[in-house]
Amino acid sequence: MATEMECNNSRPSSPSLIQDKETCETLRLMNERLRILKMQHEDAYSHVCHIESRYIDRESDFYKGTYGLYLTAKEAAEEAEGEYLSFPKCPIPGCPLHTQLPITPEKRSKTINFDNEGFQIPPIRKQAKRKIIEQHFPQIIETSNKFKNLKLQNEISESQTIQEENENKNNDTEMTIKNQLPPPIMLKITKNYRQQLKELTLAYENLRTKLSGEYIKLYVDTPEQYRPLTKYLRQTETADYYVIKPNQERPIRVYLKGLPRDTDMEDIQEELIELGFNPQKICQLQNRRTKLPLPIFLITLPRTEGSP
Image 1: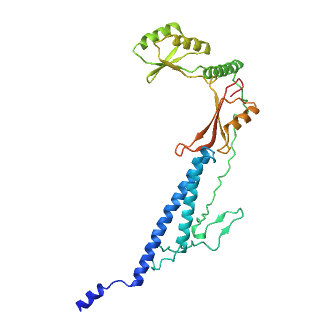
Image 2 (image 1 turned 120 degrees about the vertical axis):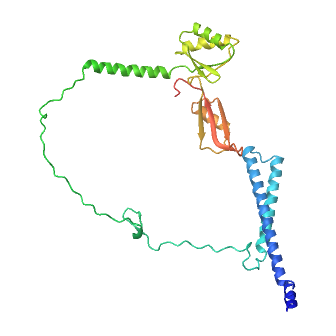
Image 3 (image 1 turned 90 degrees about the horizontal axis):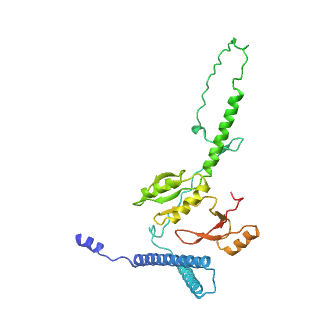
């Protein structure tokens, strides 16, 4: 009895089962080869698109060679896909590699009710129960006002009104002056910064200072005081500083969107000149990750008297 069971266990697989396994393995290898060829085809296509958007030169040898590699990858992928589709299906029932589980369709309610405004009405079991609340209105009691015969008097005098108007004007003037203050001058802190500050405060009475990290901010009240101060610092060889340009001297930067990414920047410049603008610089932004040009153009315009 034991000898018969050992013989049954040692019997080789049937030829049909071996052939089915070989067919399944062949299908797996063909599917893997098709996946690799499709990836190569997508890489070649993205490379060609990158060259077209960056250089726009289809007559160069580099572009022609890249385009030839793209066509070769495309033909190889199409040929492998045709072989895979024409090959017999996997004969192994329930094969985990070549069997797709059926997708159960979603169950939807048969009847959907809508109200007069077009909103869907939830089923009754999901609706909140209405509660009947009895409202009790209090009884109105009439009362008499013993001060109804008194007249209201306006106690605000003309002097107080004029004083408030003057205060408002002073506040508006202070805000205007504050908005027109020149930007600070950043003086770097060195070994002899105390001597430098002493000389500056003696030369300019309205000078104000404020510590900011490794620099000292120098403030003045008017542009007339700002220009001599910068001139004095330029003549001082030991002073290490930098100047922040005021808004009146900075150029205007505008982002232009809504154009194709391959738009020629010379065409944009010509259109702006025809509209009455004088662009100083036009550049196209790029994606940080892919380094591809974006459909966004940065235009630098000079600031004029009527500029915002």
